[in-house]
Length: 432
Ligand code: GUN
Ligand code: FE
Image (cartoon, rainbow, N blue to C red; front, side):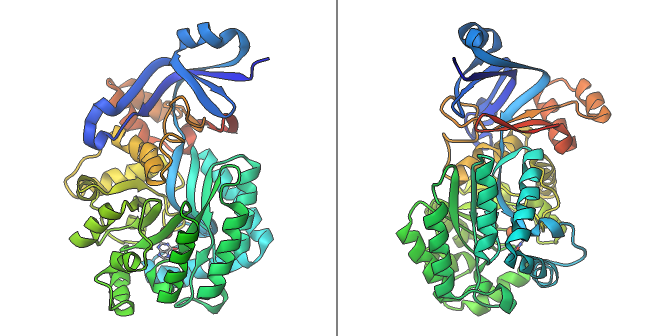
């Protein structure tokens, strides 16, 4: 008895970076089919071919007027900030003090962390996000709760406990030594278990002493394939503060560089106010940037220079940055990324938006060939999109001609309402 599953719909993904190679990177197959077995995509082709080859011994699902794309990848998000999304009126440093820190204190309670983890994962899956790089809180139990919930659902997720040993409330402070020990224990317990990975997570330079950043480097040396996840150059006042706190480093990115934290699998959120040297450094060290447009606009941080960073060779992907970001939807995140580029005289195509939400995320996380594409060998993490989920979308889509026009309208107007179904490792994990 075969356990193959065949999903029949239009298929859309990227074979490479459309910011570099344009529409040559776009792979669209009308009336296609994916063959899934053991959690992975094992074959793809036309519906007719796949049914002829495997149909007699497989479960077949046929979708009408739907498009299958790779599951979305959110390269920067905060679990504990789920409950304080849409907090009024402040910019970064006061926003942290007034809203983020008090909320994060509640995660000392494991039961609270567990309850929020469930809601958080439901929300990711309702929005078609199948992998995320996640900030916990300083409390190891925030990450325990999150990994337990993600493991129970078979998801590919990356997370870490926050390390911060200064410039924050006492209740949220660890020390260089305590942060090191707690992180080490979490790596030993969770990294590489099922589809879970660990990210060493110093919050940002202002809340870590140089000793703590050194402890982070020690962890990266001991566990070379863990991730490193932090923030950089988000807000002007933050950048000024970093200069005062780290007078011996050349600049903000230089603080992380000097500590030995930049390499492949390092992801820095934001990167708005970077100088030339910092951009070169990110490129040289293969450090990725998570662009978080809804957050950058909501807390007034600035306009990310996506085209410049990308053309200079920096790996850029997208993140929601919940709770400074305002939507769990990568479609809505692209909607705002598009506007941020418009304000700078640049255009992002819908294909570039899909790339930033899928394959670019996989590349930023060093997971190309594992997730982010509809490719045999990749894990079957997928979204079944309904491009006509609302009356307005129906009208707009019916008045679209090209694939690009349809996809662009879908990405501008779409949100969780057009995430018809979400699959993770070949399992249905959300259905409208
Ligand atoms: N910089 C340091 N911490 C945070 C945070 O929680 N959110 C955002 N947006 N920026 C940060
Ligand atoms: Fe953030």
